[in-house]
Image 1 (cartoon, rainbow, N blue to C red):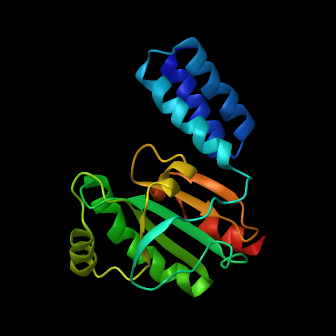
Image 2 (cartoon, helix red, strand yellow; image 1 turned 45 degrees about the horizontal axis):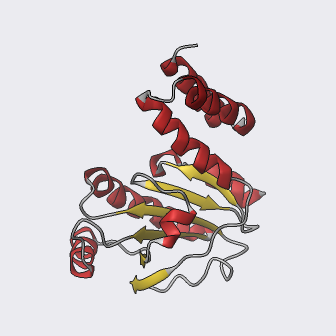
Length: 189
């Protein structure tokens, strides 16, 4: 199977909730085509899949902008959506206002959104606060010391993780893939 075909099949398996098949296919891509660009993406997907079903790593927060969301341990019993982003990231700049619209619906369902950023590539607290103000963001934003991003195997942004009511990671991928139907299923379970 060619690299693109392996990757697409793995992605489809992952989307269907078949983590074992996705993991096997991503690993085959890494093993059989280690120098392909898609192998690097497959490695990242493998790291993300490794988190699923495991207790959510704690947040290592340097600073909180907005309301204090509390610790993940204190949020057990709620569904928590973590979104990793930065002001200098063009894709993040598109996703964060969309997340605000979702947050307006989700908070009524007792879903907690926490945006996680790191001061990198010259980003400062002032730049983040300006972005928050310009986009009228109301969900909590925390500044990560770096270990949170590493704990969640974030290699590229935007990225997201969803923590189920039991405190275990149930999703780790792109924030645009988090749907109302997915969250409703988690809330019902």
